[in-house]
Length: 132
Image (cartoon, rainbow, N blue to C red; front, top):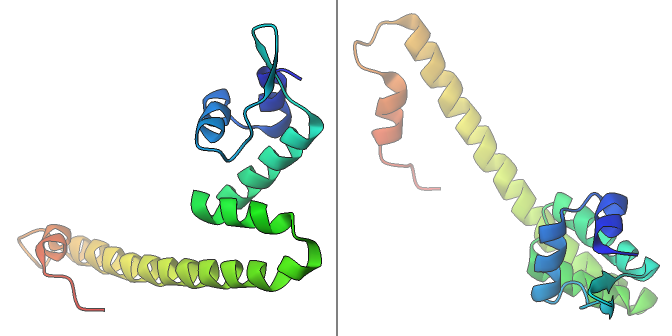
């Protein structure tokens, strides 16, 4: 299949496909004349990459998972390790977002109250971050 068909089937932008080829996440396809020629395996691999990226895995983590996918059942504990590390990162982001939500909610409430002549949100942004 040509790159346009691969893009349509996977929902992945053509430039992203080319980028993944350049960085080695996808193989450089064979050519049929001046057109790239992709196989079903390329579509499956790209689908895997897209799903992993949607779940927030970094490109390095995706590369590791792709390598581990070749290993069958033996690789399961290593995949678990990559997933556990990613889970910790996701949980840290969630905690950061919850702190951000609280700060913004407090600032909006303070703005709504109108008790402070200065802008509470700007004050919060100018304040030193708390260690944590």
